[in-house]
Length: 171
Image (cartoon, rainbow, N blue to C red):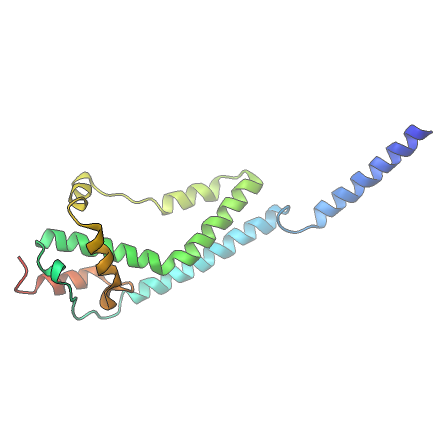
């Protein structure tokens, strides 16, 4: 008799628990997690588009004595790096949110699809010669360039390279 009562209680608790888990939203519902990933990606994509549009703004000059004193090769590389840094700064909040949602999704579901995609999207690649040249650019100077008003927001680095390299004082 006691065994039957215990068995009935266990079945009742199990039934309540399973109905609760079926009706409960996030973090137990894979569909809610997937929707969160898609929503975060959509916001990240929208912000990326906004930051790309900002690149179209006009930059008429760059006031940097250090940059003007560098060979053209170093100027170009420095501006490419600065361009990447300021673009990343523009999209960082949405990018971080997306990555957190993807990590949560992956940890809850075990599905690595979105994690692998995000790692591929955020992979940086430089040729060996470029990495050697990067060692010759002081980090402090890159930081100073990213804080200049004309380079603080995303910019078209091809346009800015043309402006900087047309300066007759450039080597």
